[in-house]
Amino acid sequence: MRRRRGSRAFTLIELLIVVAIIALLISVLLPSLSAARAQGRAAKCLAQLRVFGHGMAVYANENRDVMVGGRLPKLDACNWYAEILGGTKFRPNFAAMLGRSVGMPPFREPARCENIIDSEQQPGSRQNFASPLYICPEVADWSDERNFSYGYNYHFLGNSRLSDSANPTSFKNWPVSLSKIRHAALTVAVADSMGTAATVPIDHRAEYENNGNNVDAYGNEGFNLDPPRIDPFNGEAAGYPDHRTSVDPRHRGKGSVLWVDGHARAETLRGLGYKLGPGGEVEFDGNNAQWTGNHQDLAWTPGFQY
Image (cartoon, rainbow, N blue to C red; front, top):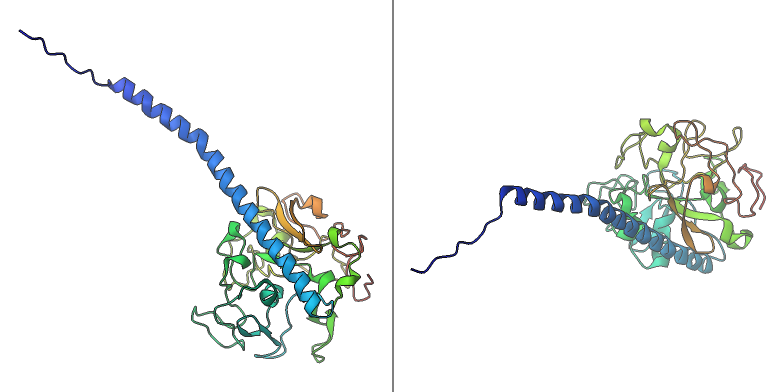
């Protein structure tokens, strides 16, 4: 008689060992994959800022050496407005104004007036950016033009707020000539912005709100990027005198920063001159040497000189 040889199966213990090994490998690999994805998003963010850097140079070249303003002020429901790439826009911020220079329309339907509601049910003053170029990939839902993921060094490069509401051209510090910025490689232009949440301790910050106005929420007034030092008597800030914005260290403890000369790199808050309180809140007194354009540690006041 021929003896039939039986096949040997895995025992339960052997299967459990295999499963445990696979689980161990996954636990080891997942943090590495997560870090690689975060590094990729940070690299993409820097690349986008370099595009803005090119756009700023083109904008100044086409506008008699004048740098872009932070955001056009509000006079009434339809003014100020400007022609941007894609149409006429009510109170465009600096990024929307750069749309023509970077060759990318910022909005699907630029609204001419504040009370116009677009196809996404957004008012003319709070439209959402349509292109990924305008949105930091680390915070992909921060698309509101006011609660924006990128902020502009408006204090020293183009503060287009009005000093006199009765005078529609009484801009606080605009136009600013690019040639006035004597240390372009040492002057912050655009960076990841935290919004006015920077003022409160980390544990008290609220989640981002599209179309929101919560001063404690991430991204609130993010397009206004305040420098480290703010004059307590005659200064300027996004929520002056009680709130301020700052760079957001959203990329593994660092923020992506574009400098006036067009290069971009990641920086810590302390490396940019900010001082932090015990709860991680950003204080009003820091070092402005990398913000003023002349590499001096000065706060902006109405009499500021480059």
